[in-house]
Length: 172
Image (tube, rainbow, N blue to C red; front, side, top):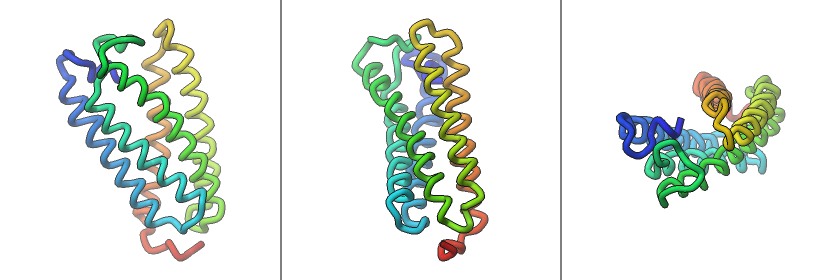
């Protein structure tokens, strides 16, 4: 996916400035809203902060695109992109796991705790697949797309449920 926004590619500006940057901003705003909306507790607060970090990092990756082919070593911009991307994926996986554990104690989100925990586990498997494919670039795009699909689907489903039931915060 990063290669779509690589420096010098035909659609780099569209991918970076209409894809990564706005998505990251919206995800960070989602994390802020979770922080203020979910009942206070370590798990929900930590999970919300990690979503904010993931969103901010995703927006940052849009400003620091990789070189064509996304080599392991390259320009400063490429290296910043690579140094941010891996920890971001791990950050959001931990975030989803922490939120899933907090959902067990929140009445209106309780039914999402197992789904979120399984999403975190699947995301971790996909991240391992992605990391193991980086040397040969075999199926790297597939692993990355599965990883992001799982993450975005989980955040989207939880976000839609919270949006659907906005006045249930007091149902702890």
